[in-house]
Image (cartoon, rainbow over the protein chains, first blue to last red):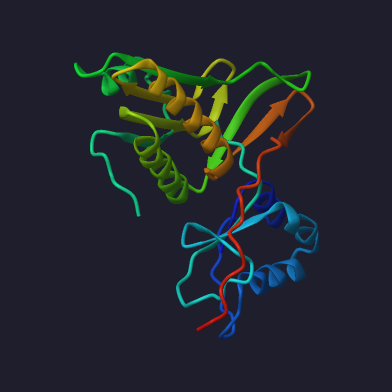
Length: 77
Length: 155
């Protein structure tokens, strides 16, 4: 699980491994983080998720070894 | 999937971007035009004086999205080569953060492709910019990449 930009700063770390129950989704993973970092909850509508480096819907089911990231609005260029 | 064009170049770099070298890289005898977009650090943002910028990226995904943009350029426009290089880390005022160079036989395709490349990069490539001012720092307002539709029910 990876965080970038303002949500990385908010949580205080960039990368962490997580074990989730069978059938868990990206939204479940995010909910787990909002319990640890309540301020993250307010960011959900301004984040997009990715799974294995492709944009992914929040209800995407997770599989062993997936790389999930939560990405704030991008501002490259 | 998309076609890889071997002579194209997609890079994320920490060191200053060598603009003339990239110009030479895309230039060939078959071309009649090169359009270069050189994006660099402005000295102000919304009326506040900027001190410097700091860029971070989800590097493997950013590179993959930059390659996708390159492949789209070849599909949509009659171009020959493209180079897209983005710099990361701390950048001072006036330093190039993004360089896009597109070569083509004719100018219209090169102009259109270069414009498409920078506009798409700003919406889809996971790179973030933090702006530092005298009295603080903020993450730049960005664009939220379009989220894919909800997943299909499990089969």
